Image (cartoon, rainbow, N blue to C red; front, side, top):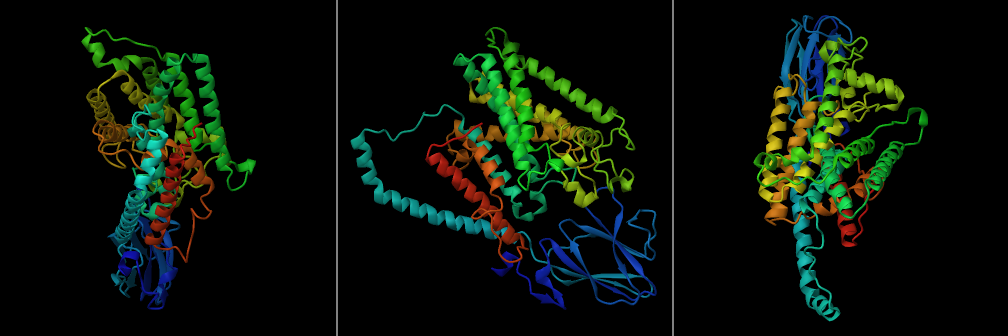
Length: 570
């Protein structure tokens, strides 16, 4: 069982193993060389980067140690002269080690012989960082079994009394048909908010649960676009419902304006959670971008919404009725995409190559150090200023990049496009009456968008024309994450609303109070009982346990609110 919690000995050859943090290991350095040498390293997560100097080895120096971050594989070079902060590929090295895959809590040796040759070996084996996932899953399963047994016992004991009370009062226990809404949509939203809470609490600090350093797609990167897309799905359903109740478009517009303002204002307040210092308050954020996208898409659909009756004899119109209904919004989509592409590839950014989409810093061998995000970063800098954008982007810790806002102003263009794609899914619900037609249409769009996103990214992480990039909210990112959303809703819709194999429990309850859970987990993040710490908190097991605890507690909160029939929306 100790292996399941990443157990390691307290001390190893004089090294304090308990002082290591999660995803760290020791490298013991020994030099028999006649002069000082310099150790340079390169993380595999840093694409097209130079090696960075990490340590100076004095001649005839023994048992010097270095703490490594081993979340990603590392490469090393040992050079006999100081070449500065970075070592480029044209620098001759004494020795180098490629494809080095060190692991957490391991101890590794590097010995430089007198003749300049290097010896690499493992002194202490690392722990398996994926056993904690199995341990936590087993623990959760045991808890669920105990709760299920307890619930069955309670129902069995009180069933007759409850039944007599219900029969005497004449209250029907049937709730079927009380809510005329898609359970799958609420469930999808619930899954998204639960995943967001999980990854925002660290997700066990596994690299794949966090945001990608720059290009690529990790678990945390698919949560926010899912929220945006779901919001788009709800827009035509909500507007049609209001129009059917004879609510004027003027009042609908006012409600959209008011809701957008509330979303933006709440997001701005959450940005001041560590103190409202106006001189460096971050302006944009998750809720702010939701507010902007909802405003544009809501107003556009209100403007263009109309009751279109497709004549039965016109076959081609029946096949494309969703596009006919959406023709006005699709023109806006094409316009926004054109503006985005023309800007990122046509704008002349000072001291940066035209069309640059990289993270700056060490990227491209540190040739464009201050060019993070290219045109996108430059426009946000001009509009918001350096002090009002996000100061700790993921690229900062891998690429040594400067501040960049992944929810900035310019990225709102394609965020709006993503919501419009969600709006298209909602229009499909309204215009196609059978479940087969809806699912077929969603899957067709998912294939089209997946192929476009894959082609633009070259079906790779780094080598495409427009890489998949959440920080830039690139067009390929929009296409791929939207395709995932179409597929996810199709699956949930079939399982929940068509076949009734699952009722969406417990995620449906979370989806019906998503704004409470989002604001709540942000405000109460550092408070008991949601947050706790014990000891050094330096293993995946304890960090995963804390993340699961926090997420489960908020899920239980959603279930309690659902039990009390309390639902809050902006």
